[in-house]
Structures are given as structure tokens and as C-alpha cells.
Length: 129
Image (cartoon, rainbow, N blue to C red; front, side):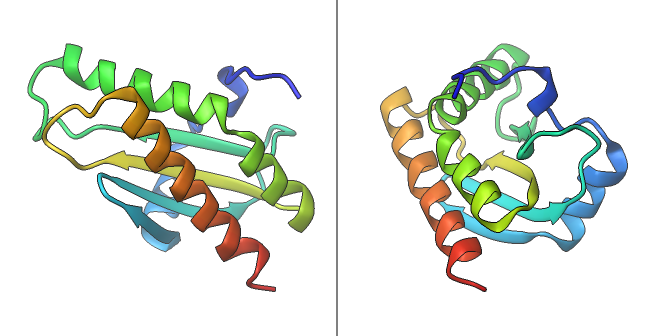
């Protein structure tokens, strides 16, 4: 499996994003909140994801972009967990990953917390049959 996280993994549809936010299942691991829902995506990919960092917490766009870059890198390195969920349950996931802290954590902490979040998501979808 390639370790890229290209454009096809980016969730762009406003309707799907709204549907995820309103009807999705929430999984939390401070400072992250992951909202997920199985949907039919137009592309043939196992998941699509949106990264969000509130302007209320980080006034400068540079800081918001930095946090999103760190989040994207952690997801890119550990997307195999999401592939596992998708292939075993034969579903496509729409994901909304929200950063809620007011300070930027180091990359190692962000990576660890995202892995824990994905493992919780895996338990939710694979043990909930």
C-alpha cells in the first residue's frame, strides 16, 4: 500500500460534510474529535477525510495550517488502520477530524493520539457487527 494521502482522500462535498457532522458517530481522544459515518463516496477510495482547526483557538492562519499539516502527516502514516476497517466491513468512511486544544502539541503526541483514535474507531466498526 502506498503511503500517500493525495487529493482523492480529501472530502470536499459540502453535503457529505454536513451529513457527517450532523449524523456521524463521535470518537474522542483529547485534543481530537473524530466524527465518522459509512457513506457511498464518488471515488473508489476506502475513506475521505476533512481536517479542521477552529479559528477561535488559533487566530493566525499559519498556526492553523501548521496543526493541519501535522494531523495530515499522522493520518498519512497510519492510514492502514482505516484501510483495514474499510476492507473488512466493505464500507467507505467519511471522516471529520477536529483539533480542539488551544496549544500546538508536538508531532509525537499528535501521532500517538491519532493512532489511539483510529484504534477506537476500528473497535467501533469491527466489533459492532
